[in-house]
Image (cartoon, rainbow, N blue to C red):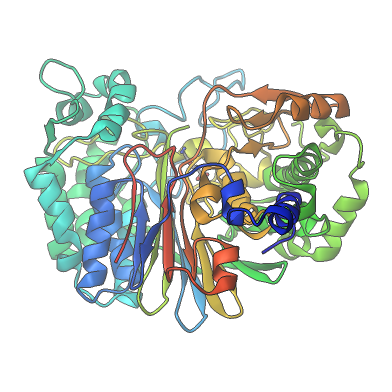
Length: 579
Ligand code: DON
């Protein structure tokens, strides 16, 4: 248990008054879910059940991840998908790890300036709406590679629950209905999407109503029977290419035929004795989390305290430096020479610390790299099985319901991942990211991501599984959950629920969730020169698992449940399920 101000105060109180346990000093959060044999945490309760059933019937964590991936495509269509892409980080029971990159690729006909008008200015919405926004999807190839290489069960077994939910439908709860209501106007613009997700009167499905998706069921059956070829080489690709051609897109059959998953070495780093395993490029996530953690390691965060002005100051400065690197230097490793070893070097972190003024906010414009001038939704799930295999998956359509288009007869929502590229250096994307040439559009290139499916280990054993949606904020959400557990002694639910802060170099603003900081702390930070944005909305939906207890204190006492799961209290339809 780290020694922080609160534990020091509580310890002195407990000497005097023999008071309540230390955990009582933390903010209220529901108790984490407990399990002795396995844990599945996803953003949709039916998908969590699907994952747990796979584990109970002898599947491993990878099998459960595949079944959940397909299930979410049906019961969580705003982000769950087979028309998008994502990443899977696996840490096996023997301590080895791997990373599957099944993110979208730019079509062969893509060009660097495809979203600019004749004057070189971005065309509003072109990289976000409709077929021109769609990257070549990777989810089906990725889930199948995971199953074939590392799973135990058949594709048919793992896809059956998703097919049943698509065919028979499922009853919407409040959280499910909210996601449809929020995107009804957008879905109404595409007749094929509207026919699935809106009722005949044009209204979105509401609480207690049943949503069935027969076309999606047919696509899933074809994939289940014939494998990924049904998607990439058969009628599904044909239908998407046809719709794309008819509606302003550039997708062609060879884009699908050539799609290949990459198996990559995950990024690893050590933070205060904990081994972090996370996403390598084409994600920026793992590298930037590690860069920030390396900087933070030089500060006594436990002592400075969660939410104090001093802690926020050093966190924001570490974020500022790391996001400049993210936005200027990183890109698809097949196209860009990523300076990963430099960014992960502890000496580089020390150089950054040396530049941080202990009393003043930094200035983002001062960090402008030379030559640089020229949403919802994603979803994350975390799984661990009885053997200790841990799987973290983040996959996405990018924006909520992606590009908002479905090719006739397929039932498959398509992504708008092309917006993650640099449309024009210096012009912000959907998440306000101001990016450079390393992430410029090129045919077959994968846009730079922030998705950070992460597994943390301690003494050779799995310790934490964590990740979140949240666009550019995924990195800081995941980072803060790790720091909250390791430095601030929170239990896994508290660590995920705690109010968040975020800074991404540009805009030079510290975003703070509602009730995130006290007015006194805000005043101290403003006095140091920070521009604060007191957001009126929360962000992210983290899904996490802690092994051996619900918090470090419980782990150290040896008295906790083996697996402790937490779905973000911000996630309205999710569930952590253990058994
Ligand atoms: O890959 C990325 O970084 C983004 N496409 C993720 C989008 C996302 O998290 C949206 N959800 N809030």
